[in-house]
Image (cartoon, rainbow, N blue to C red):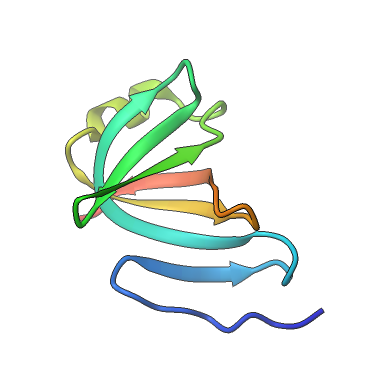
Length: 93
């Protein structure tokens, strides 16, 4: 297994790498713009660009709902397919 270097940018921080062929954890800072309970995802806006984070099934809508239109930090797994899978969300204070 080859180690993936930690990458730090204004938009995304790689927190941990699982393997070169699987996903790695990222932290996204931006505005929470939408919550779709039917589709099981949230939408976060970073510098005017929207990102969809899937896998919201276990998250509580009453916790995430009040965060809409506020700055948040979303932890997600970024897979080889470049899709984000939800891990956690918190307010960016």
